[in-house]
Length: 144
Length: 220
Image (cartoon, rainbow over all chains, first blue to last red; front, side):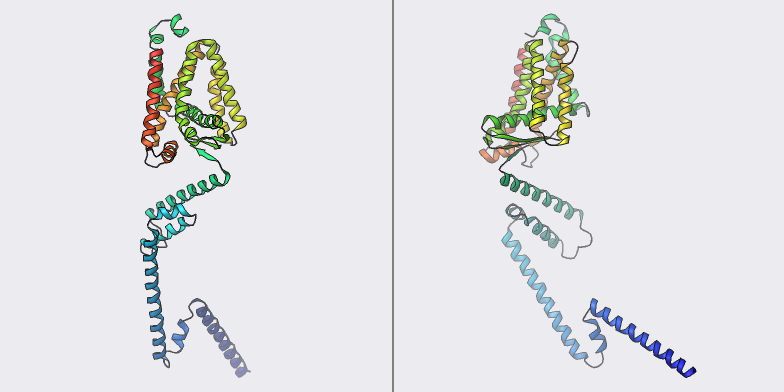
């Protein structure tokens, strides 16, 4: 009776631990897919993992370099934000993105007052552009 | 010469025009009292755009007035250059006409007041689509309606002349708001059409207003 009970309790405990382990592994896999592979293969495939990590690091470097090139190309081709705004409605958004990038790519949590005022300015101009579109669409003139 | 000056040649009547100018300058500085007169000038500005559009074969779609004294006239067709110019120029002309007509005699002053009431009421019916403009125009309408209903016709004449001066003085000041470097408004539109800088148009309107005041001072 005692053996059975203890065996049962051990089995129960083990199965519970096993379940916890599985669920934890699933969570990790969902959030960060690379991390469990590094932990599990820590002893056996260390050199292989290092190789993989190195490959990944090289890719991100390339991506950063590519992004930088794109930014440089965009700023050269656009000339000024105002010219873009005049051409299309989506240009206001591109102006906003450009403003963010110029502030260092990392300040996404709390936009500065300068950025906020810039967005407001872009939005107001965008509204003017929309008004122009409406005026042209309906064929009316507005006199203030 | 106006009847009022003939009948009572006192100091106030002798220098009536300058007294009106002085009182108008004080009124313009006062925060609440000046607001209905700003609306009045704004109405005459927008209705001048509208009349210019009608005169040049266009139509008026809508007139909007805002509590801060600004306004918007939406037109379709017409001669854009003339319509743009007539906003400030028209308000100056209205101020000049109101004062001049009210100076002729008391009966004509009453007729003029009635015609202005009819014009405002027509604008309200045909061209106003929003509640805020309706309320503003009702206040403007009250200014003329109370003058019209005054027990002594002599008061109507004086108040109408004072109203003319207020419109004229506001018309002199309002183009100066265009000099804010934003390139928005009639001056900017005229500059866009004619390639003549906005400042030139502001100077033209200012000269018109000063010249109108000068002519009225000579008449009085």
